Image (cartoon, rainbow, N blue to C red; front, side, top):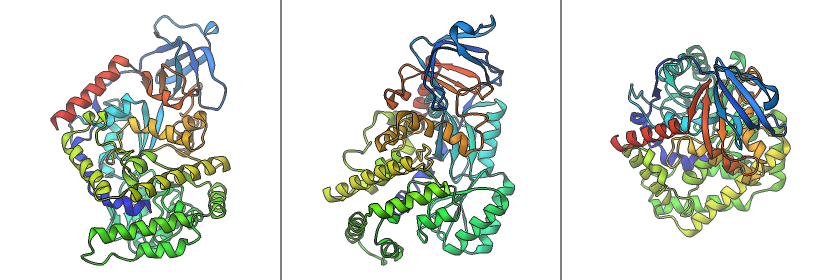
Length: 489
């Protein structure tokens, strides 16, 4: 269901290209840093460690311990952490840095906003391989400041594809060839999309297993979420197919959605049909079927990335959740804002109070099912789908964590969904995701305790990314740079 709604925004998400780039900076060696008298929340699940000192050198955490037992060498830059809290750098596990093109060397708004919000790792879920590889190399080499990048490359989709850039896959042979191509080009994962047919989808699943590269993405409209889980899909994005899988009328409702809309059908008729379909979906929701699907996800270890900011503010937006006048729009370039406005209007125009009530119920059930998944041990990661309309890069990840808490995760679990869980999924648990000796020095210094209120992850005093310290003044400069870019593009 989410897929059909998101298609109304086709063309908007990836027309942001002229405004995307990373932050230029001079290559430099990471600073030696000592954060003293800080409360460490290491994201392992352990209790906070007050009055701690953390030493960082050569981009790594070199020592952690009680402040009265750690000797700070004289050449370290001292950061006073008194009354503050240290957490791992955050990961947005569903983002789009670029789409059907390359923005060149211009300074953009996405990466500055990510860094300013403490995002130190991203999983790009659809873009050109050549651009993403070049950007990753510039960041890894120190030529640009930005988060670690892991990516899928183009989508694998049916004809016509939902978004660009896509590789159209209509047969099993084309699916195998597409997986091989992307694996050889250096993609970290394979992204499947909504219009794939079963033969192509299952060929992609088998070839991904053979090539030892995980496939993930949308549950195609033509199969069930349960079947996708059994096929080995590593993660499901946006809960695609999940609520449908909880319906006692799943197959009937699926077939209704697959029927092409008549040529020339007016919008009023389309809205009425969608309203009726959604009513049947909600009326047929089954706790028993939901429980069975959750059990399958847990048994198969099918990760979930809900992307609540996109669901709430675009896919199922209501007059109450609309962000059309949000002050953060000052960071969004004028041309991009125009595309966002078109995306919002497509979801808000000519909709009724009944439509908005249905959407609110979809969100309520989505939160409920995520709570069930978490209780059952289904692994959950935080992601946003930035920069879809009304999904603000960087800022929205903090919102996603707040929605995860609303769904029933504890603040620690929500923090882990943006730290250690992504590290585990990426196969980098030994390298990042927690504050432990020897790990990559990606950390946030917060003015308030996120375990008291997860919204406190927004209270950022400083960001250390790959050992480089950015204090509040520098973070504010990044925001100002993004604002200035937005005003002139």
